Image: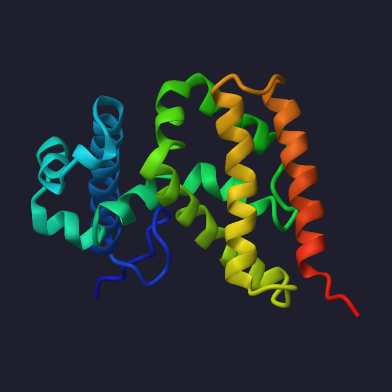
Length: 198
């Protein structure tokens, strides 16, 4: 009789094949995201095609669609990390240094960041951030003076406008100054939006 002990590097009940499949899916997703990021550095978002992404990432078109429905969903996934820090500002749970670190990263990559925060890209980014904020508002403050969706749009635009101005050199200050201002303004706005008069 052969007794198989659970492997320490995988959760109970999962086979080595399951773990390998998850690792392969993660690598594929990272390859797609990496290819997309490199393309964003080279050209305008509107000029990037799914064919460009799959060619650059080395995956097939059907594999791309196993991970992302379209280019906008890929954009949203690529912004999940930095935008989650902004979105957490509405709940007051973002670690104090995380927002500053995100802004410093934007500043280091300001040429790309400024391009992303302008024109049609800005609308896509605002919509992505708004959805992330909406999820958090529904959990933490389901009752707002306006609809949760409207409140989320207001908060997303309120956060992106000063970041765009700062990256363009239109407003002075350090990343920490901007982070402190964003944190305070966001919390004040959330209180105002969740307060029901009367």
